[in-house]
Image 1 (cartoon, rainbow over the protein chains, first blue to last red):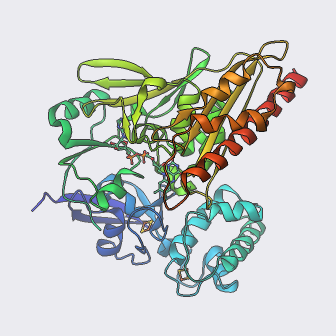
Image 2: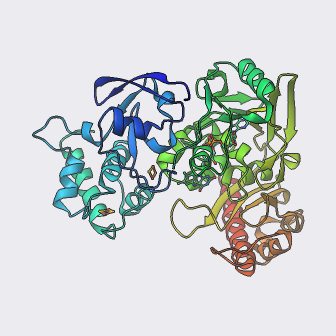
Image 3: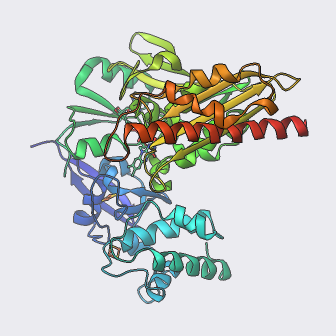
Length: 163
Length: 294
Ligand SMILES: Cc1cc2nc3c(=O)[nH]c(=O)nc-3n(C[C@H](O)[C@H](O)[C@H](O)COP(=O)(O)OP(=O)(O)OC[C@H]3O[C@@H](n4cnc5c(N)ncnc54)[C@H](O)[C@@H]3O)c2cc1C
Ligand code: FES
Ligand code: FES
């Protein structure tokens, strides 16, 4: 059996330790060892965006990183976006309000991506929104609800001064 | 889809990287942003005994000013190239091309060195490097060498960088004359690899005559290509006399496209040369405003 490498990273504010082969992806570590099953795996080769997480604040594909590369990093998954169990993040709330999801498989990747996108572009045009969500695929909604949700979240986040 | 097992190395200096590459030869592969290599490993289109991660090699990151031009470390993320003001100022084509690479999540990890070393013929940076006569700085256990863009892209996915070598930095010189730059491409969906794309730089003398023309193309051959017929036709013309649509059509002769499910040979030639004409028109318009303002 290949060597097991000790791993340690901060996931949604908590230190998570684990053990894995070098080839263990960050996505599999997060799902199987940190129990963040909101990290969805659609394609496992970088195309669909459903595995998107924040690594040190930046949206990345967790299927294209090895867990050992994230050793020492701070990871935020969809589970870590909301401030507490009672409150949704404005992007989550907007997806619910605007029918930004149907089956929900793509949703965690979209929510994390849109949160990062709005952080960098607090006041996007519709064209910028479409460009911004182009890295995430949805097979259900036809995207209209997702664009509307992004628009609503932008307005709410700007209004509340939350960024 | 899981990669085959490998031994992971995380060196912190270029000297250690090239030491590992010398020791393991063909069995070792540098890992940059992983946005091309990890999919290939996951699909098991390729496998390596040793993966040499470059992400902890600090000296490979960052943009520095170099003799009026710039030098960009191989591990500089595409996202950092996109927002760097020295790049926008001195090498506008790199700045203009970057947003066309994949999606922002890809650019957060993907690196300029990875794009150039991977040498996908449909990739943006290789075409820009070729158009601008960029220079690759390459290291190995036996020392440093340089390779000009014209000798760098050998064939599809094949470059002048040998398995025991490391691409360290890319150098670009700034254009010290009135100039205009433009980049565009045709892709089915935002972020997809381009069916065809063009990177154009036009420089003039003080009287507004074209004395430098750089036209790079992507997606229309086994490697990035220069549209030398277009460049030759532009030389010596006053910018106001150049008919971009007409001159752009000459690009069809410089292409060597393949047909696939995305587009036929004929479509790539026609759409590609029309695109060259449009991008040329944009670059010419830039020169005119520059001259008008200056
Ligand atoms: C969904 C998606 C869409 C994409 N769309 C585009 C697009 O539109 N245009 C585009 O250009 N790219 C696109 N890409 C690819 C992306 O730009 C890659 O980041 C890039 O091709 C490779 O850079 P990397 O840093 O990720 O390199 P890696 O994937 O880590 O490496 C790629 C290859 O280069 C070698 N290598 C890397 N760095 C060095 C070095 N310093 N010295 C020697 N060898 C080295 C590696 O060994 C490997 O063979 C896309 C990727 C994805 C997943
Ligand atoms: S599972 Fe990572 S991008 Fe599809
Ligand atoms: S809601 Fe089903 S894939 Fe997007």
